Amino acid sequence: MGNLFVKGKFIVLTGCILCLMAGCQKERPSYYELGAEDLEGKNYQSAIENFELAIAEEKYEVEALRGEGIAYLKMGKYEEAQQALEKARDLAADSEKALRADILAYLAVVQYQRGDFEGSAATCDQLLDVKNSKEGYFLRGTAYLHLDQYDKAASDFGKVVADSKEYNDYLEIYRVYEECDMKADGESYLELALDIEGSDEQDHYDRGRVYYYLEEYDEAKKELTTSYNDGYKEASIYLGKVYAEQGDTVNARANYKESLSEQSLQAKAYNGMAYCDILDGDYDSALSNIQKGLDTGDQDERQALLFNEIVAYEKKMDYVSAKEKIAAYLEAYPTDEGAVKENYFLETR
Image: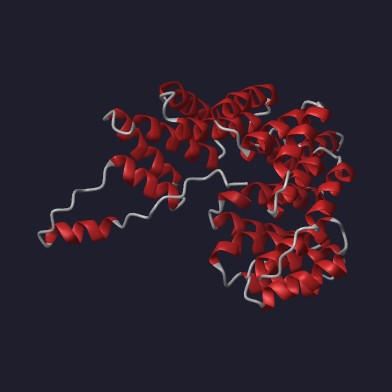
């Protein structure tokens, strides 16, 4: 199942300037191209500014609105993301099926993040009318599950994993069930994932993750250690998770520290170390590591970091700060049912 994020070539602006100075006739990148470059580089505010200029010029208007919507989504500004993506959807020609399907997929994600599960399911209906895709069935199944329409969800998820050899298809479905406090139902998908054959470092990593969620930690360690020794660096993050779940924060922390050498893994590593700090009762260190993780600017790990920040304040018995943090968190992530329960607990403090 594809990752809903733009994957374009990185445009080196300074190279273009040097080329022009040398007499080369290459044109300056358009505002849309600059916005796409910023989006790829995770410079979301700059991306929005360039996309706005492209929209004002009425050049690549649909594509620029799509890019703007993605940037707002990555920043957690879901209302603005929905407005941009709805405009892009309305302007996209029926003949541009691939672009229209992509816009609808992002719009369904935004509606889901806002807690509008009925709207997300309806958008997925439109998406599946345009393109029969695993993404569409997965997103609609996710919305159905939150709407307690279990049979419809299972039907859509069945279409996602039919003949699938992708571990992520099974893992993502499990995590949706886990989010809805239905781990037992989700575990059946993990069991199916173990039937996939494979022997490279990615396969060992994925099988290790499956065993981790099944809480078969010894098997998880074997697979993840093999993956890491074969050069797959991200396996160290899940090795840290396994050790932490076993209460071995020394080895967990060692794996997270090892991950700090990889820039793409730093936010996850800091979050893992913060979790170890919480287990060890060192809540000030946890808050310090969380801040370091947030300072990396990694939007994909931001939600997990902010949730652990709430936990750290709660463990410190600083309920005033915990309540402030969870109010902001739920405004950004209203569909997190675990946070809703945490908020209910804090309201009684």
